[in-house]
Image (cartoon, rainbow, N blue to C red; front, side):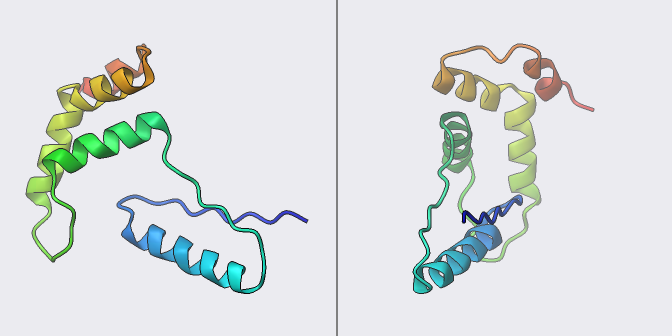
Length: 101
């Protein structure tokens, strides 16, 4: 019997830790465990953000980071990075991502 547990969230560290704890507990019980990896587009977007925004290892004001992320999205930088990684234009999505609300 196959059992799945899917964690979803934004930001990452709590989700990563939760997934790791559940994986370790399942392995201890002898269950087969696999951990999903980021897709090519998501990985490219993540790497682009990490080049501009330092990993949150210490408590700090996040407003500057959020502003930088918003600028990267609204300028089309993230979209271009993902399109380059995938090798295809993401028509239709571009208008949604670069128009400020």
